[in-house]
Amino acid sequence: MFYLCSIGSNIDPHIHVSRVLAELLANVGPLRLSSVIRTKPVGMHSSHDFLNCLLVVESPLDAARLKQHFVTLEVAHGRDRSDPLCKVHDRPLDIDILASNRSGDFASAEVDSYLAELLAELYGHGEVHDPKVALQVTLPAPSGKLKPGKGLLTRQVGLEPLVLGKSSESGQRAPAIYLDAGPRHITVPHQ
Image 1 (tube, rainbow, N blue to C red):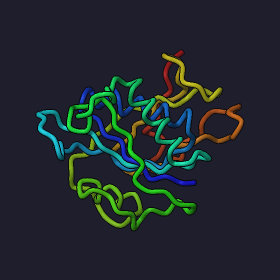
Image 2: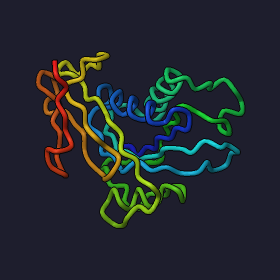
Image 3: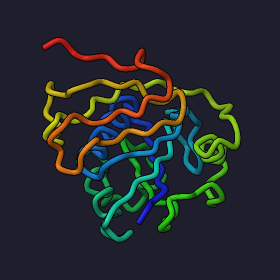
């Protein structure tokens, strides 16, 4: 099943969004990622802007089990989900499933207005006018696992839609990077 998901963060958002993208790539699989934008909070009072993006993932998990995985990630990043008002408080991470289907085509999916331009851009039907934000994402090592300081590549994301994915199901080779903007966006850390 394919899932259209949103990621948002307004507490250390550069750190949390970058890390969760790497974690999702390592644990869920290839990601089709929108641009990353800076937005004002919606439905809450806060002076902290959000970073938001959309992504499409394919998973054998049903929606309930995938959402539970996302909640586990949110808690690991410091979100207090036990607070009954957590929906209106600042948060280090929020991952929501917005839609699902078997085709992976979400071009006509219903999303909140602040995400509509991201969805249109993701499917080549429009431009994003909110400020875009560049993030560095450390891609998983050949084993498919993230190890602090042991990432294979760092990839800049956020300025345009792209696909991040693995080149093999077994995780024996380096992750494939589908270059849509040329090799200048990849750096190899010195070892």
